[in-house]
Length: 85
View 1 (cartoon, rainbow, N blue to C red):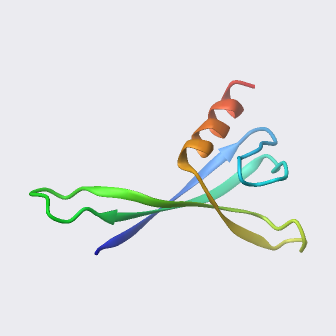
View 2: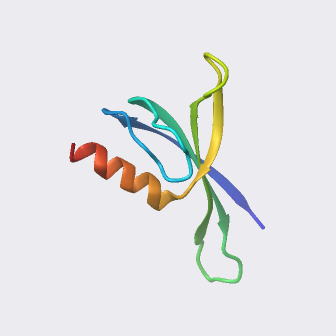
């Protein structure tokens, strides 16, 4: 099974919430990593998302970060809410 990771930076202009993270996150830039696995047995290359993670500031240690698993749908909802504020 082949796995690949895609990295992107997303920017929030306002403080925001993402389901699964109990606290409000500050506005700013966040790194998002999406892991995908190749779907075997097809006559063309196709990938299925298996995990989405976001790097957020630690709630316990000043200047540290945590990587938290999130839903790609919840991320899209948070981005949409940020744009419409």
